[in-house]
Image (cartoon, rainbow, N blue to C red; front, side, top):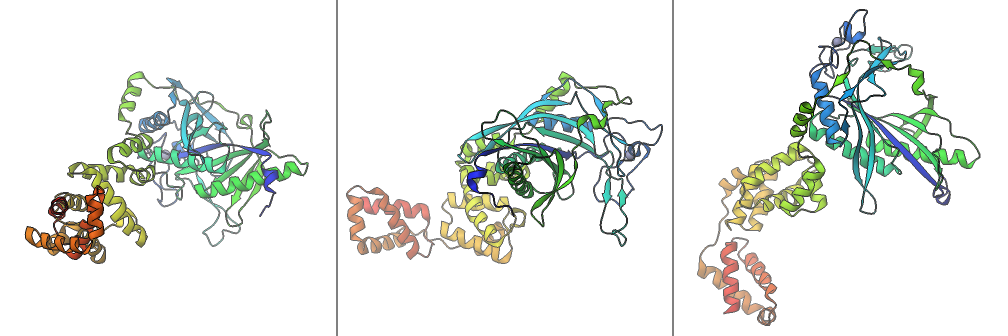
Length: 489
Ligand SMILES: [Zn+2]
């Protein structure tokens, strides 16, 4: 581990830019009809087009353009009416064509942004330079075979998988900001449904460009690229390491080299892999087999209409609709599917806010204690709605509700079934409740005094005491009413 003194670190400012590759969830590949599927037997989803055999011609997948456009709009990019596919030439064993079809000087979309929360509670806007379309390469398999020590195997199924590459401006200044940017980006992509963003399967991959400069220096330092880090947590760790490494190089009088470095998560450090390619190394030229990509105004209007409510806007609305905290809003909107299920259910309840409340406190607390995911909950959304309505109608007390939830989790049953079977008893007999209230009033003269001298909130104390005495069985609505009557009378 590096151990640079904090006052040395404080002299420098890191500059970070991120390049994110995202596989699109199309049924077929970008330029041919092969299945775009993860996990098929090696080299089964391939054809002359994605292998680049002589004479094969690419045909652009319209669905890939739709997804790329949706993502661009969701990231506030300007979509160019005309963009150009280009060949990016390089030789690598998992790229049988010898080039990738990408976009270069005329990308699909530019000038977007993502807002990220900062440590001091504000938001910071990170610019998106460009979003362009390209195809993926195949995969070299360096392990998992008996002779992996001496051989590398190739799986070309991934050749031609449609990708978007999203390049940020060098606006990011801390590893935490990078983490937030990636978290927001992934959330938006999941909400728009253009990718599953599964990092373990390589659907979302991130490379980070990082340099350091003395605070206030006008020019950027020389950057290194950290490649192939497979989780956001590791990207944060890799950036932390790399920033400190570069500061140490500069402090000891050396110069940072422009290079590509690999993150080793087991050792918690980056290693030099190769000197970084420059754009001219790739000898880009316009793809002669594909016409310019024209995006019409009608198409853009249609895609704009198809955009779902995006996570940030949805959180703001839900905070207002359900009186949520920012944190609770994040919990409920963690995935679009979950937020949809919640809102659909909440709308059918008498008091949607109570549904949110039960979901977050009663259900959330129990799930967390068990280490369960929301999908593993024995209580369905409909069950929560029923519990909320019963509470609202005063048909069960909150204590009874808690007991019923306990049974649900003990037996792995949904709330409606448990409620039907247990049907908790309720005392709705006015004189029985009055008798209990009289006892509590007699036993607590000081609180009665407080109430009668104007401290009306003390009524809650009496309601609580009587509820306890009734073992949670007093009808809450009736109890509230009778307590107020007795105290006022
Ligand atoms: Zn193919």
